[in-house]
Image (tube, rainbow, N blue to C red; front, top):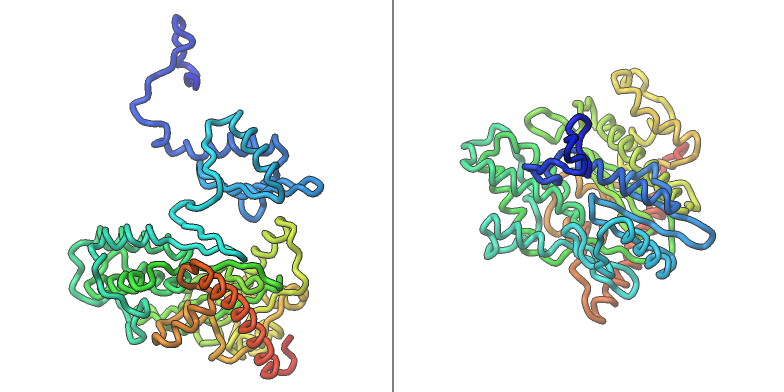
Length: 420
């Protein structure tokens, strides 16, 4: 450390001021730390990812190293264990660090290793949240939100402890990193953080009861025989009773693994279901393009153009031809970049029946039986421990892959002419 310019004492040039506040409390501390760490990694030979600034990539001949950073928590993986050891020795010569060994717990995410993949869950995080809400002994339910629930800002009376509401809902946002099955419910209850009502708190409590029922659930990632990207896009037209804006959602698979998902209210009111679906399709396209650029930096090259599945014929047609021009004049121009990508054959937009639309779970509350089936298709499962668990996990991966192939075949037979 050194004194700021102008504060150096002439008699004590090596002295520094004693801080009244810890350096970690300063707003610029994380940025200064990251700049120093980035400089050291670049000196070693790493390149900072353009798609994700927190990812650093080292590639030399047959050696590939990936370093993922969150402030001072770092994950390192490589094609050679010796290269990991060498990198850790180098970082230890520059920074004081502790090698925690094989990754098992990272930022609240628990990693369970299987014979053919990994299972990501947040069991301890959920338990802490239930304890905070005094619901450790609550009875479980089979879905995070009732299919008949319609929350509104005009519900009354006002919930007396808005701080508790905001604290629990904020925690639920982080939990959705490994639980795509709660993404829609979390998105919905987040819309009332400024003025929560009793009905909103009841929705939060039901979600917590569902988490109690599915405490060990998490997302399963396994080896896949396919590198095909398939994205499912959907929208619930005018689903909000207050401002009539639509909720758009998507889920993206790389082979049989779910790698990205979203549930979000659209910024503007859609004049038709086609417009709502087309906006959701544009958001999905942007995410797919980002994912493509990230995979390219990871030296993973896709054998075929990604397929975007949409269950709305109008939106599917709009992605290929500017038909119904008089009805789409009001749409923002940036949504139409989907057509450019389709014309360039970097993506494909295809139609599929609503019964096969996996993104439904991100746009509306659905009944328990269908919800359970769709949750399994999203590879959100219980922690598969033991030999029986490994067999079930392996069976799930092949089932998910077969399901995606089945959707492709059934949708191809329904594909409208002129759509590719």
